[in-house]
Image 1 (cartoon, one colour):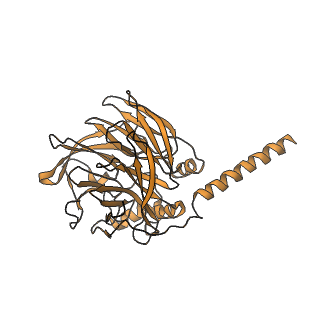
Image 2: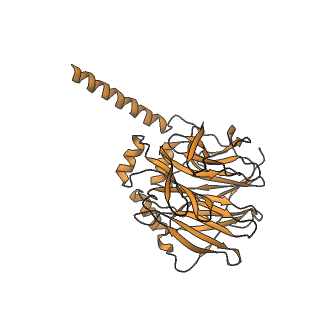
Image 3: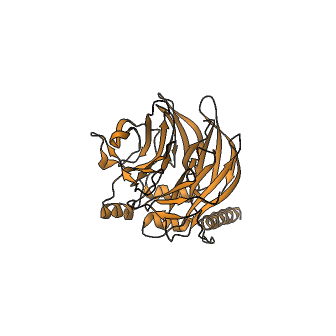
Length: 364
């Protein structure tokens, strides 16, 4: 009798979780198309523009050619068939008529195992020095690469590779100094099926780590698929996007660089990378509104997936006060948006393994 009760209860719990998983795949959602103004595809970017950051002068650095473990065999085949190489692209908002172009990387750096993901840039406005931190996924493990931009040569001078067991399943990085940064560990399991089960079972094994120049320290843990990171203009607040919980977490930076959660903003879309608009402090987030189409796109990049850009207004304490949808595409033009960056009412939208879009913003 008791055994039947226990088994029945477990079965009901299983059905409840299964129903939640199916619901969260967004089969019920409808995506409508709208633009913030005139938009066009930027020529020359065919295989991804996953993350980006814009400098105060309008130069935008973009990661392209993402490949990470675990990925399905179809993605490895797609990379091989199209000879996709990891690269950093540069786009100038001051001359949007020009294409994005690939930056050279200094000799000695192994570009054959360069698969860039998240990016963060430290800009010294007095000296003009620009330092890039980039998450990399060489086969079997993850690293964070540090480069210095040499504008006269359109070159990235490789400075350092950060490796540590703490960099376990890296997704994004957020620079706080010349030798310090936050980064997200998106998940725990690196095997394809174990990682899939971690996602299905909603296991909160992700975290945000902090490197202070000497040691790696836990900043926040118990997170479910933490994705991109951004920081407020005053450096007091860290924004962390979540793909699975579909919310933006707002953290206060403590004096020891741990993070204290102060706000959770539900956005009902699988969030990817946030960026902060330098003129206003408001936040842009690239997002995936329909998960089942995103899942298909992640297995077969030719399959369309909707794109979305959300614009979040913030107040003087860096809390989110209002949200609007700035861009929406059902998958007709742009597949799988991951990030957006704005400069003087002009915007770039990046993707996982698709194209790059440029828009004039006339709706804000």
